Image (cartoon, rainbow, N blue to C red):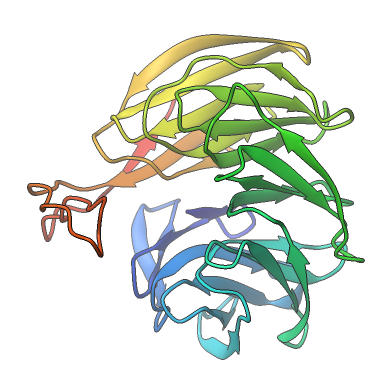
Length: 298
């Protein structure tokens, strides 16, 4: 899920396409088609371009930011691109490839692949601060830090006691990272030192993390059907202030820093199928027609 505050639109990944919602009217206003296995959306308004990461065929779809019309497709050398990030400083798009434990750098102006970052771990979510890129490494329980210009990895920070970090959010003013972890913790990291300074408890089944600089609140969206709310009392002190009920399966999330509203999505699910050699951890199937967007306000 990606919120574009400039156009007040919400971009939702829907398996083979991206659905676009006008947040003023809560109505579907467009669609980006032909994005097989889409994971994420990154936007570059100053270039009038958007980008999707397509895990099924390891590609990036480039589309027109205003009209949503497809412009082109870039083949990604890495396998299974998941998260995708646009870095305005370098005008590069980065895909984070779970199948090859690396990141592909693409020139956003012309769609050319310009390099690869060897992350030495399976990346999940990534954020940037205008000078560095920070990526969760789920299988290593670390954050990798690299330079988006040189593509050199500069640090790998351990997140213990956090295990299997997935979501990642950033407080650019106070230099803090918020990693949502699979063992029901949030690792809060000092971006200057790379040290974990707090590990508040959160719900189970974390996928996404978010931060609202206007309220000082950090969030994790939890598949159990909750959102954990953590307040930044000071840059070094954090308190869990609320656990908000949502709906089972509501794991992805986006924060609107202008309205201070949260968005998450889920659906009703059928029984989980039996495990097989090909699918050792199967997920329950979504019941057709039950997909919903949940909007949360304080």
